[in-house]
Structure formats: structure tokens, C-alpha cells
Image (cartoon, rainbow, N blue to C red; front, top):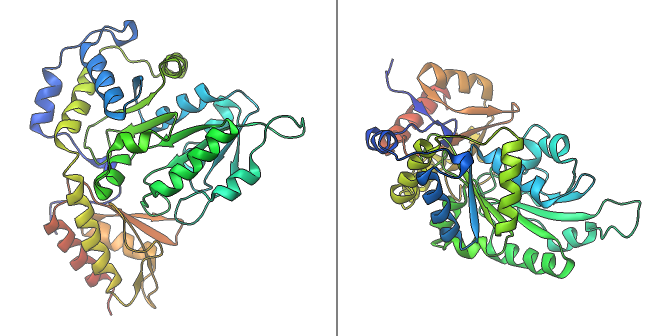
Length: 347
């Protein structure tokens, strides 16, 4: 049995290498709650400039970035428009309801986009006491459960025009935003310009061990900072973690294209198998979703057979599996994954 694990479960499984660990160990630190951690302060200043926003805040996770943003944008009883498969709706343990007291109005297309006419049809002004006022429109780019899809700028800009016209804020869950930007050769600040707030996760494809950023107007970030403390996410000598994020931003952005190439190679190999389909189509970025239709091997059995060969993927709801490429997955490991799949699924 091969000793090396090919871990395709998520791009969150990346581990810091020796040089990143060295940078973390040597990071200058202070008490971030007092605003005295120089490495955190530098990261926040750099990321605010990166997105061309007034300010930024370092937080523990992508979920925390979304939730402090949601809290800062809304009041209990407000309504938020989001895609029904958005991470903020589907995979954050109902935090929007439990913490911010908001309800979601869900509209959207299979590719993760929001139809502008559908969004406009559900916007509420708050004038009628029967209906919760709409305060926020949320987008996710790339969109995880839509297959890592890139949200086109035309859709983003059309929604922004609507939001401005109707006085509604816009939030971007940009956990994997740099995957979208690298794939399109697009400046992140151009995407961020359409949103009042934007997040980015450092611990996915960028390879840092912990942390996300949220950026926006200075007053908004002050509110987020308070809610970070309220939610238990204010850290002390967090410069150790911020140093890893800075290292990742310096060295791991352009190489996301390698992950995309590996994902496409994997998807092409899967699509060539007569008993495998790609329900989300060919990947835009680094997420590959596939289904199995085999007379003798179920999807669950395939996932288990691959695990026995030390190739890890996630089975989702018994219908599709997900494989995610990242900086710890090489082209050779993609080929090995394909060999294991072909062995486990006889033609």
C-alpha cells in the first residue's frame, strides 16, 4: 500500500512548509486586542490596500468573517438575500439566525449566480409591516457547492447597480476569491469594488494554517472588530498566524493556476470513465464534483476503496463526491488518483 496520502477532501488540509514555519516563529508580535501586534496590523493594512478598501480585520476563519460582517450589516429581524446553496446559508450552522437574528430569502441559479430580476422581485423596503426589510445581498465567489464556479463580473455589476438603486448593501464571501481572480486574470480590487464588504480565506488554497480577512469601510470594520470580540474571536499574539497569511499572499497566489490545471486533468480523466459523470461540469477552478453510476460499485464504496489506497475524497449526501486540488497535491498524485479510481471501478 502506498505510504503517501493524497488528500483531496478540501484545500483546507494544506500544511505550512518549513519556510512558512520559520516566518511564523520569527514573527514580531504584541497584544492584538490592544491593537499592538505589528504583524497583524501590517497584514490588515496590506489587505485593505489590496482590496482598495478603507480598513480590514484579521479573524479566525471564513465563517467568522461572514458572521461578523452579517452582524455589522444588519439588525435582528432583517432579511438577507443569498443563494440557497451559499456557504453562509448551508454550512455555517444557522449562525445568521442564531447570532444576528436575520432570515434568508434564497434565490439563485445552479451555477451560483443570482438572477437580477428575481432578486429585485423579493427586495423589501420595510414599509409594509408584514415583511422583513432587505438589508443585504450576499454572493459567494467562487461558489463552493455550485462546483467552484466563478461568478461573472456582469452578474456582480448588475446586482451592484440594483443594490445601489434600492439602498441595499452587498457582501462577498470571497473565501476562494483569488481562485476566481487568477483564473480570469482579474484584479481582486476590481471585484471587491462592487461590494461593501469582502472576505478572503488564507487557510484554503493559499496554504496558511489559520485565518481570514474581512475588508470594508472603516466604520463597518470598527463594528466587525467589536463583534469579533463578542463572538470570542479576538486573539492576543496573533502575529504568528498573520505572518503565515502574509507569507501566503506573497508566494502562493499566482500558483493557484497549478491547482486549476490539476483539477482539470482530474476532471478530464473522470469524464472519460463510462461510469462517472460530472454533475457540475468541468471545473472553473480547483473543485471537482463527480457522480458514479456503476452496476457493482456505489459512490460510498468507491470513496471507501480510495481511502484504502490512501486517496481521500469527500462523499456528499450519497449522490456526488468532491475532490479539491491544492498546493499539497502534485500532478503525479493526480495520475495516481486516476489509477486508483480505474482500479476500483471496472469498466
